[in-house]
Image 1 (cartoon, helix red, strand yellow):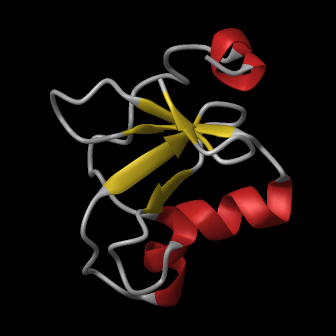
Image 2 (image 1 turned 180 degrees about the vertical axis):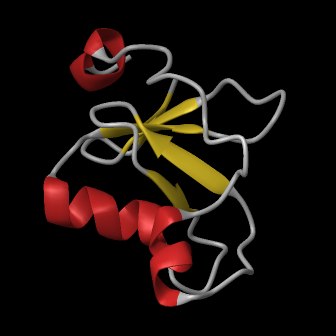
Length: 86
């Protein structure tokens, strides 16, 4: 396991009850595939299967290394820096 995953929290708090991608909401878009949550700041963005890929865009602009799945029942985390799942 990489140091980013080892040192990252398991959760950054609960995902908004409305379960929406913050970037898509700002753009007026209402359709995305899956949600991911940044474990550094709690930002919720859509995954790379979504047209706008806000979770990856957030990583690129913030350099926050680890996000987690924000989908119900999923507990995995992803390190963008080391391209590892944990």
